[in-house]
Image (cartoon, rainbow, N blue to C red; front, side, top):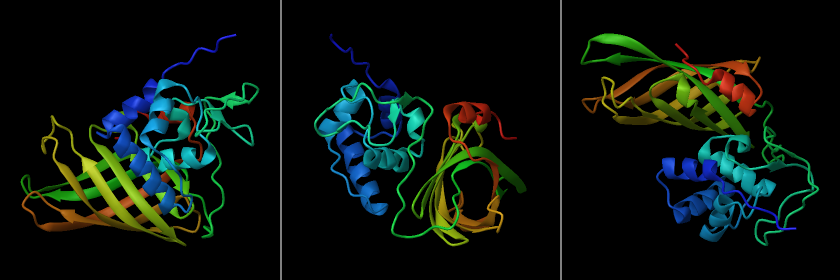
Length: 252
């Protein structure tokens, strides 16, 4: 019996939305694998086979790299997620038709060599404050964000329906100290007319693991260096599609 393949339009849409070619995407997956201590052999041909539907689900090592690169759980990347030993062979195209599959399952990352005491994975409310020199007034930016954790790396991406701008943070966890970078693409129709801002951030996680608070630093409209408070408030430990759909609404 012939098995029909269904193209993975979700993965292709995410990749093209990141303005990456298939070659660029494969290189980013390799770099992500090295960062989390799980090297992989991603290449353009593998990305093509995912997007064409020839490979319905990636092996866990690729699933984790995909989450790091895109900042999205595997359940939102158009794959049929698999668990345990029943995984597709990404390099040889094998299929286990008896594998249990669930569109909402997110693979459990393997423990890395660096022990991380807490897991910060889930949905958070992100809030920061900034001063607008052009308007001589302080403002607050709010997003619902999804955080994915792989070892000591924390990837945070805003849910698109939670704000008119998009936000991403790439962080490293060292005990209660969380340090990294942020990027915000502002609303094309807003005051900053789609300008892209970026900078550094350092947060301290409270012992409960339900709040992180600290400071951001970044350049302003007049190329001066600004800073301000930033906090992440825990909302939900789940990263299932149903949960993300529930929080994909205005955070204000």
